[in-house]
Amino acid sequence: MIRVGMHLAAEIRSYERAATAMQRVLGHGFSAKTIERLVGQVGAELRQQQESASSGQEVVVPKLAVVSCDGGRIHTREAGHGPGVFAAQWRETKNASFERMLPGEASLTDPCPELPETFRHVEKVASLAESAALATVEEGVAQQAPERPVYKAPKRLLRTCLSSLAKSRKFGQQMQREAARRRFFAAGQGVFIGDGLPWNWSIWQEHFPTFTPILDFIHAVQYLFSAAKAWEASDPERWSRYLRLAEACWQGRAAEVIEQLHAELRARGLGPEDEVEEDSPHEPLVAAARYLQNNLTRLDYPRYRSAGLPITSAPMESLVKQINLRVKGTEMFWNDPTGAEPILQLRAASLSEDDRLDHYLRQRPGSPFTRRAPLQTAA
Image 1 (tube, rainbow, N blue to C red):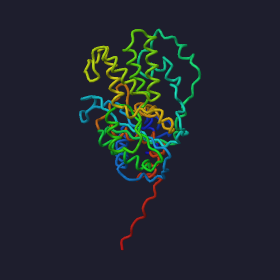
Image 2 (cartoon, rainbow, N blue to C red):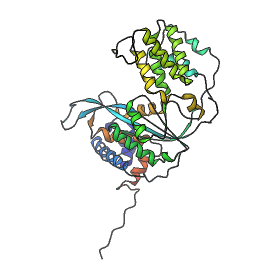
Image 3 (tube, one colour):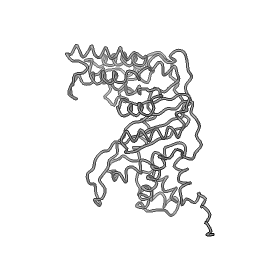
Image 4 (cartoon, one colour):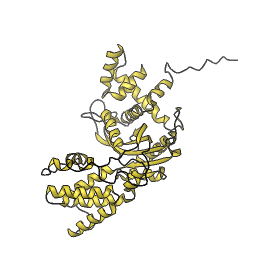
Protein backbone atom coordinates (compact mmCIF):
# COMPACT_ATOMS: atom_id res chain seq x y z
CA MET A 1 0.00 0.00 0.00
CA ILE A 2 2.71 2.48 0.98
CA ARG A 3 4.69 1.56 -2.11
CA VAL A 4 1.72 2.29 -4.36
CA GLY A 5 0.91 5.52 -2.55
CA MET A 6 4.48 6.85 -2.85
CA HIS A 7 4.70 6.05 -6.57
CA LEU A 8 1.42 7.86 -7.15
CA ALA A 9 2.47 10.82 -5.00
CA ALA A 10 5.69 11.14 -7.01
CA GLU A 11 3.86 11.22 -10.34
CA ILE A 12 0.44 12.83 -9.77
CA ARG A 13 0.23 16.59 -9.28
CA SER A 14 -1.58 16.60 -5.92
CA TYR A 15 -2.01 14.37 -2.91
CA GLU A 16 -5.78 14.60 -3.34
CA ARG A 17 -5.56 13.15 -6.85
CA ALA A 18 -3.15 10.47 -5.68
CA ALA A 19 -5.63 9.45 -2.95
CA THR A 20 -8.47 9.34 -5.50
CA ALA A 21 -6.37 7.21 -7.88
CA MET A 22 -5.63 4.71 -5.10
CA GLN A 23 -9.32 4.38 -4.27
CA ARG A 24 -10.35 3.94 -7.90
CA VAL A 25 -7.61 1.48 -8.87
CA LEU A 26 -7.28 -0.54 -5.66
CA GLY A 27 -10.72 -0.03 -4.16
CA HIS A 28 -9.10 1.22 -0.97
CA GLY A 29 -6.17 3.43 0.01
CA PHE A 30 -4.98 6.38 2.06
CA SER A 31 -6.38 9.83 2.60
CA ALA A 32 -4.59 12.82 1.06
CA LYS A 33 -3.33 13.83 4.50
CA THR A 34 -1.92 10.36 5.13
CA ILE A 35 -0.14 10.40 1.77
CA GLU A 36 1.31 13.81 2.59
CA ARG A 37 2.56 12.53 5.95
CA LEU A 38 4.11 9.45 4.34
CA VAL A 39 5.84 11.57 1.69
CA GLY A 40 7.38 13.59 4.51
CA GLN A 41 8.69 10.42 6.12
CA VAL A 42 9.93 8.69 2.97
CA GLY A 43 11.42 11.88 1.55
CA ALA A 44 13.41 12.42 4.75
CA GLU A 45 14.57 8.80 4.67
CA LEU A 46 15.71 9.14 1.06
CA ARG A 47 17.67 12.25 2.04
CA GLN A 48 19.33 10.32 4.87
CA GLN A 49 20.13 7.42 2.54
CA GLN A 50 22.11 9.81 0.33
CA GLU A 51 24.60 10.11 3.19
CA SER A 52 25.48 6.43 2.92
CA ALA A 53 28.32 5.15 0.75
CA SER A 54 26.19 2.67 -1.19
CA SER A 55 22.61 2.24 -2.31
CA GLY A 56 22.87 -1.55 -2.12
CA GLN A 57 22.38 -1.84 -5.89
CA GLU A 58 24.89 -3.23 -8.36
CA VAL A 59 26.62 -0.44 -10.30
CA VAL A 60 28.45 -0.64 -13.63
CA VAL A 61 31.51 1.54 -14.22
CA PRO A 62 30.62 3.89 -17.11
CA LYS A 63 32.69 4.28 -20.26
CA LEU A 64 31.50 7.89 -20.28
CA ALA A 65 30.15 9.58 -17.14
CA VAL A 66 28.26 12.84 -17.69
CA VAL A 67 27.31 15.11 -14.78
CA SER A 68 25.20 18.24 -15.14
CA CYS A 69 23.29 20.52 -12.81
CA ASP A 70 20.85 23.41 -13.06
CA GLY A 71 18.48 25.45 -10.97
CA GLY A 72 14.70 25.30 -10.85
CA ARG A 73 11.95 27.09 -8.92
CA ILE A 74 9.45 26.03 -6.29
CA HIS A 75 6.79 28.14 -4.55
CA THR A 76 6.91 27.79 -0.77
CA ARG A 77 5.05 29.08 2.25
CA GLU A 78 5.96 29.34 5.91
CA ALA A 79 4.58 26.44 7.92
CA GLY A 80 2.73 26.63 11.21
CA HIS A 81 0.11 29.27 10.35
CA GLY A 82 -2.93 27.08 9.70
CA PRO A 83 -4.86 27.09 6.42
CA GLY A 84 -3.87 29.52 3.69
CA VAL A 85 -0.56 30.86 2.44
CA PHE A 86 1.75 32.80 4.74
CA ALA A 87 5.07 34.39 3.70
CA ALA A 88 4.96 32.95 0.17
CA GLN A 89 8.21 33.06 -1.75
CA TRP A 90 9.96 31.45 -4.70
CA ARG A 91 12.89 29.24 -3.71
CA GLU A 92 15.57 27.95 -6.03
CA THR A 93 15.86 24.20 -6.33
CA LYS A 94 19.17 22.53 -7.14
CA ASN A 95 18.92 19.67 -9.62
CA ALA A 96 21.55 17.30 -10.97
CA SER A 97 21.71 14.58 -13.60
CA PHE A 98 24.15 11.65 -13.69
CA GLU A 99 24.22 9.84 -17.04
CA ARG A 100 26.05 6.65 -17.86
CA MET A 101 26.65 7.00 -21.57
CA LEU A 102 28.17 5.22 -24.53
CA PRO A 103 30.57 7.72 -26.12
CA GLY A 104 30.22 8.74 -29.73
CA GLU A 105 32.81 7.51 -32.20
CA ALA A 106 36.13 9.29 -31.69
CA SER A 107 37.84 10.83 -34.72
CA LEU A 108 41.02 12.74 -35.52
CA THR A 109 39.02 15.58 -37.08
CA ASP A 110 35.77 17.32 -36.22
CA PRO A 111 32.97 15.00 -37.44
CA CYS A 112 30.55 17.95 -37.77
CA PRO A 113 32.46 21.16 -38.60
CA GLU A 114 29.47 23.12 -39.93
CA LEU A 115 26.67 24.55 -37.82
CA PRO A 116 23.76 22.03 -37.95
CA GLU A 117 20.38 22.87 -39.42
CA THR A 118 18.84 22.94 -35.94
CA PHE A 119 20.72 26.17 -35.26
CA ARG A 120 20.03 27.62 -38.73
CA HIS A 121 16.24 27.53 -38.49
CA VAL A 122 14.95 30.98 -37.50
CA GLU A 123 11.85 29.81 -35.63
CA LYS A 124 13.77 27.08 -33.81
CA VAL A 125 16.53 29.45 -32.72
CA ALA A 126 14.03 32.05 -31.54
CA SER A 127 12.32 29.33 -29.48
CA LEU A 128 15.63 28.21 -27.97
CA ALA A 129 16.44 31.83 -27.10
CA GLU A 130 12.92 32.38 -25.72
CA SER A 131 12.75 35.44 -27.94
CA ALA A 132 10.54 36.81 -30.69
CA ALA A 133 11.38 35.52 -34.15
CA LEU A 134 12.79 37.81 -36.81
CA ALA A 135 9.63 38.72 -38.70
CA THR A 136 11.09 39.70 -42.07
CA VAL A 137 13.36 36.66 -42.45
CA GLU A 138 11.72 34.25 -44.87
CA GLU A 139 11.17 30.81 -43.39
CA GLY A 140 12.58 29.23 -46.55
CA VAL A 141 16.01 30.78 -46.07
CA ALA A 142 16.89 28.32 -43.34
CA GLN A 143 15.78 25.38 -45.46
CA GLN A 144 17.74 26.11 -48.64
CA ALA A 145 21.21 25.26 -47.33
CA PRO A 146 22.75 21.96 -48.49
CA GLU A 147 22.58 18.98 -46.20
CA ARG A 148 25.23 19.05 -43.49
CA PRO A 149 26.64 16.28 -41.30
CA VAL A 150 24.69 15.68 -38.11
CA TYR A 151 26.67 15.20 -34.93
CA LYS A 152 25.91 11.79 -33.45
CA ALA A 153 25.88 12.57 -29.76
CA PRO A 154 26.68 9.94 -27.11
CA LYS A 155 23.91 7.50 -26.25
CA ARG A 156 22.48 7.51 -22.74
CA LEU A 157 22.33 4.12 -21.07
CA LEU A 158 21.07 5.07 -17.62
CA ARG A 159 20.35 8.27 -15.69
CA THR A 160 19.87 9.03 -12.03
CA CYS A 161 19.15 12.43 -10.54
CA LEU A 162 19.00 14.58 -7.43
CA SER A 163 16.81 17.51 -6.43
CA SER A 164 16.96 19.56 -3.26
CA LEU A 165 16.56 22.96 -1.62
CA ALA A 166 20.13 22.68 -0.33
CA LYS A 167 22.60 25.51 -0.88
CA SER A 168 25.19 24.97 -3.59
CA ARG A 169 27.99 23.90 -1.22
CA LYS A 170 25.89 21.16 0.39
CA PHE A 171 24.38 20.19 -2.94
CA GLY A 172 27.88 19.81 -4.39
CA GLN A 173 28.64 17.31 -1.61
CA GLN A 174 25.44 15.42 -2.43
CA MET A 175 26.48 15.34 -6.09
CA GLN A 176 29.92 14.00 -5.23
CA ARG A 177 28.40 11.20 -3.13
CA GLU A 178 25.99 10.27 -5.92
CA ALA A 179 28.80 10.24 -8.47
CA ALA A 180 30.91 8.04 -6.18
CA ARG A 181 27.94 5.68 -5.68
CA ARG A 182 27.58 5.46 -9.46
CA ARG A 183 31.37 4.83 -9.80
CA PHE A 184 31.71 7.88 -12.03
CA PHE A 185 35.22 8.65 -10.78
CA ALA A 186 36.38 5.31 -12.21
CA ALA A 187 34.85 6.01 -15.64
CA GLY A 188 36.90 5.99 -18.82
CA GLN A 189 35.92 9.61 -19.45
CA GLY A 190 34.14 12.18 -17.32
CA VAL A 191 32.25 15.27 -18.49
CA PHE A 192 30.70 18.09 -16.49
CA ILE A 193 28.30 20.11 -18.63
CA GLY A 194 26.19 23.10 -17.68
CA ASP A 195 25.20 26.69 -18.36
CA GLY A 196 27.02 29.77 -17.12
CA LEU A 197 25.65 29.85 -13.56
CA PRO A 198 28.65 30.46 -11.26
CA TRP A 199 27.55 27.84 -8.72
CA ASN A 200 27.64 25.15 -11.43
CA TRP A 201 31.32 25.75 -12.03
CA SER A 202 32.13 26.14 -8.33
CA ILE A 203 30.77 22.60 -7.88
CA TRP A 204 32.80 21.39 -10.86
CA GLN A 205 35.99 22.97 -9.53
CA GLU A 206 35.55 21.60 -6.00
CA HIS A 207 34.14 18.14 -6.67
CA PHE A 208 34.72 17.22 -10.34
CA PRO A 209 37.98 18.92 -11.40
CA THR A 210 39.14 15.87 -13.41
CA PHE A 211 35.97 15.96 -15.55
CA THR A 212 36.07 17.82 -18.87
CA PRO A 213 34.07 21.07 -18.39
CA ILE A 214 31.74 21.96 -21.29
CA LEU A 215 29.44 24.97 -21.63
CA ASP A 216 26.06 23.99 -23.03
CA PHE A 217 26.07 25.20 -26.65
CA ILE A 218 22.36 26.07 -26.54
CA HIS A 219 22.99 28.68 -23.85
CA ALA A 220 25.72 30.20 -26.02
CA VAL A 221 23.20 30.37 -28.89
CA GLN A 222 20.75 32.24 -26.66
CA TYR A 223 23.31 34.96 -25.92
CA LEU A 224 24.48 35.19 -29.54
CA PHE A 225 20.94 35.53 -30.89
CA SER A 226 20.15 38.32 -28.42
CA ALA A 227 23.42 40.06 -29.27
CA ALA A 228 22.75 39.86 -33.01
CA LYS A 229 19.30 41.43 -32.54
CA ALA A 230 20.86 44.33 -30.62
CA TRP A 231 23.76 44.63 -33.08
CA GLU A 232 22.01 45.15 -36.41
CA ALA A 233 19.18 47.41 -37.57
CA SER A 234 17.14 45.06 -39.79
CA ASP A 235 15.94 41.50 -39.32
CA PRO A 236 17.81 40.03 -42.34
CA GLU A 237 21.05 41.63 -41.09
CA ARG A 238 20.38 40.35 -37.57
CA TRP A 239 19.86 36.80 -38.80
CA SER A 240 22.98 36.95 -40.95
CA ARG A 241 24.99 38.26 -37.99
CA TYR A 242 23.66 35.52 -35.70
CA LEU A 243 24.62 32.81 -38.21
CA ARG A 244 28.19 34.11 -38.46
CA LEU A 245 28.56 34.34 -34.68
CA ALA A 246 27.00 30.93 -34.00
CA GLU A 247 29.08 29.14 -36.64
CA ALA A 248 32.27 30.72 -35.29
CA CYS A 249 31.46 29.44 -31.78
CA TRP A 250 30.49 26.02 -33.14
CA GLN A 251 33.88 25.83 -34.86
CA GLY A 252 35.78 26.75 -31.70
CA ARG A 253 36.48 30.36 -32.66
CA ALA A 254 34.84 31.93 -29.61
CA ALA A 255 37.83 34.23 -29.03
CA GLU A 256 37.15 35.82 -32.44
CA VAL A 257 33.51 36.35 -31.49
CA ILE A 258 34.53 38.02 -28.23
CA GLU A 259 36.85 40.38 -30.10
CA GLN A 260 34.07 41.25 -32.57
CA LEU A 261 31.74 42.02 -29.67
CA HIS A 262 34.40 44.17 -28.00
CA ALA A 263 34.99 46.05 -31.26
CA GLU A 264 31.28 46.79 -31.63
CA LEU A 265 31.09 47.99 -28.04
CA ARG A 266 34.09 50.27 -28.58
CA ALA A 267 32.37 51.72 -31.65
CA ARG A 268 29.45 52.56 -29.33
CA GLY A 269 31.74 54.23 -26.83
CA LEU A 270 31.64 51.33 -24.35
CA GLY A 271 34.18 48.94 -22.88
CA PRO A 272 33.55 45.27 -22.02
CA GLU A 273 33.71 46.07 -18.29
CA ASP A 274 31.27 48.99 -18.42
CA GLU A 275 28.01 48.59 -16.53
CA VAL A 276 24.83 49.27 -18.49
CA GLU A 277 21.17 49.27 -17.47
CA GLU A 278 19.14 46.12 -18.12
CA ASP A 279 16.92 47.98 -20.57
CA SER A 280 19.88 49.50 -22.45
CA PRO A 281 20.03 48.66 -26.18
CA HIS A 282 23.70 47.74 -25.60
CA GLU A 283 23.05 45.29 -22.75
CA PRO A 284 22.78 42.12 -24.91
CA LEU A 285 26.18 42.86 -26.46
CA VAL A 286 27.81 43.41 -23.06
CA ALA A 287 26.13 40.29 -21.65
CA ALA A 288 27.22 38.09 -24.57
CA ALA A 289 30.83 39.33 -24.42
CA ARG A 290 31.05 38.64 -20.67
CA TYR A 291 29.33 35.29 -20.92
CA LEU A 292 31.68 34.01 -23.59
CA GLN A 293 34.76 35.47 -21.89
CA ASN A 294 33.87 33.90 -18.55
CA ASN A 295 33.39 30.49 -20.18
CA LEU A 296 36.10 30.65 -22.85
CA THR A 297 37.93 27.57 -21.56
CA ARG A 298 34.71 25.54 -21.89
CA LEU A 299 33.94 26.36 -25.53
CA ASP A 300 36.24 24.01 -27.49
CA TYR A 301 33.39 22.26 -29.28
CA PRO A 302 35.44 20.73 -32.15
CA ARG A 303 37.62 18.92 -29.60
CA TYR A 304 34.59 17.69 -27.67
CA ARG A 305 32.92 16.37 -30.82
CA SER A 306 36.13 14.68 -31.96
CA ALA A 307 36.24 12.86 -28.62
CA GLY A 308 32.57 11.79 -28.94
CA LEU A 309 31.40 13.92 -26.00
CA PRO A 310 28.06 15.71 -25.47
CA ILE A 311 27.90 19.45 -26.17
CA THR A 312 24.44 20.41 -24.88
CA SER A 313 22.69 20.06 -21.54
CA ALA A 314 19.29 19.52 -23.17
CA PRO A 315 18.70 16.36 -21.07
CA MET A 316 19.32 18.45 -17.93
CA GLU A 317 16.84 21.10 -19.09
CA SER A 318 14.32 18.32 -19.72
CA LEU A 319 14.90 16.91 -16.24
CA VAL A 320 14.20 20.28 -14.60
CA LYS A 321 10.93 20.44 -16.53
CA GLN A 322 10.00 16.93 -15.34
CA ILE A 323 10.68 17.89 -11.73
CA ASN A 324 8.78 21.15 -12.13
CA LEU A 325 5.83 19.25 -13.59
CA ARG A 326 5.27 17.74 -10.15
CA VAL A 327 6.25 20.60 -7.84
CA LYS A 328 5.48 23.81 -9.70
CA GLY A 329 2.08 25.10 -10.69
CA THR A 330 -0.59 27.75 -10.21
CA GLU A 331 -1.59 27.99 -6.55
CA MET A 332 0.81 25.16 -5.66
CA PHE A 333 2.63 26.05 -2.42
CA TRP A 334 4.81 23.78 -0.29
CA ASN A 335 5.60 24.10 3.40
CA ASP A 336 9.19 25.27 3.69
CA PRO A 337 11.12 23.06 4.14
CA THR A 338 9.06 20.21 5.60
CA GLY A 339 6.87 19.84 2.51
CA ALA A 340 9.13 21.05 -0.28
CA GLU A 341 12.27 19.02 0.45
CA PRO A 342 10.56 15.60 0.76
CA ILE A 343 8.61 15.94 -2.50
CA LEU A 344 11.80 16.96 -4.32
CA GLN A 345 13.56 13.89 -2.93
CA LEU A 346 10.66 11.61 -3.87
CA ARG A 347 10.33 13.06 -7.40
CA ALA A 348 14.06 12.74 -8.11
CA ALA A 349 14.10 9.14 -6.90
CA SER A 350 11.06 8.38 -9.07
CA LEU A 351 12.74 9.87 -12.17
CA SER A 352 15.98 7.93 -11.61
CA GLU A 353 16.24 5.07 -14.07
CA ASP A 354 17.84 2.60 -11.65
CA ASP A 355 14.47 1.96 -9.95
CA ARG A 356 15.88 3.37 -6.73
CA LEU A 357 12.52 4.48 -5.37
CA ASP A 358 10.95 1.06 -5.81
CA HIS A 359 14.12 -0.61 -4.53
CA TYR A 360 14.06 1.54 -1.39
CA LEU A 361 10.35 1.05 -0.74
CA ARG A 362 10.72 -2.73 -1.04
CA GLN A 363 13.63 -2.72 1.43
CA ARG A 364 12.10 -0.17 3.79
CA PRO A 365 11.40 -1.48 7.32
CA GLY A 366 7.78 -2.51 7.54
CA SER A 367 7.54 -3.38 3.85
CA PRO A 368 5.92 -6.77 3.14
CA PHE A 369 8.89 -7.47 0.85
CA THR A 370 11.42 -7.12 3.70
CA ARG A 371 12.46 -10.19 5.65
CA ARG A 372 11.90 -9.68 9.39
CA ALA A 373 14.71 -10.53 11.74
CA PRO A 374 13.92 -13.64 13.83
CA LEU A 375 12.85 -13.11 17.43
CA GLN A 376 15.70 -13.45 19.91
CA THR A 377 15.12 -15.93 22.78
CA ALA A 378 16.45 -14.97 26.15
CA ALA A 379 19.06 -17.39 27.53
